Image 1 (cartoon, rainbow, N blue to C red):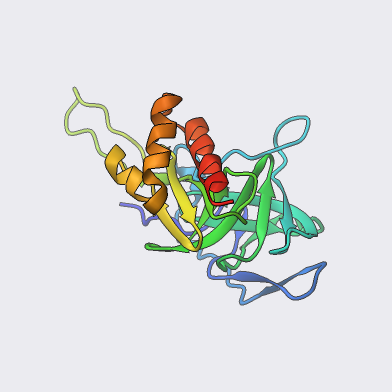
Image 2 (image 1 turned 60 degrees about the horizontal axis):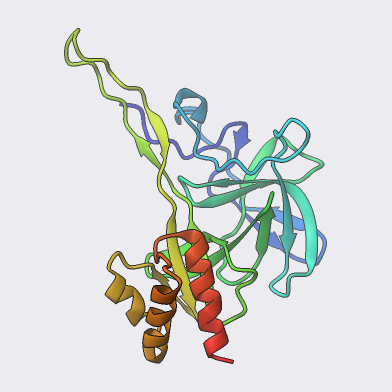
Length: 233
């Protein structure tokens, strides 16, 4: 069985970080080339990347980088690997080798196409989320987690059963609420969902029932999040 891949297509670099050392450029450090013995993503069906491409042919992975105050830093080639939960970056004057962006919580904003990514600390470690709300500066922010899983190949056990190749499979997006500094996954049970809002849970419950909202729908979750913020004004 082939080893699970850790490299990206192209000349990817494993175990490397990109640090911002001033307001204009990225400094690449601790570079290590991927081993040739590792399995290339080209040998796997599907893709670990979220399609955030732009351009006339929709094939340009451009990303814009911003400071914690949302001040523009730089534009570079960038893509989100939802299998490794890493953002891979290549300077525009390179465009061949990709490097891993250092994952620092509550630091850089990365805008890919029409989505804003940022790393946060949560119960499972540090991970990248899409900010669904307008920003993440208020008491309640709706976040989305995009993931891709890897399924190993299965050999055909007989001539009547078809085998399956190694493949990447996009999983259903998961939603989270950032309540001040705490990030929690949206519970499956409605009563547990209401408990997230503490003293405002009855107000949220009435709002959901009056407007017939669903706590597992992105558009409705955004309305609930925005309403909760108005209760704290």
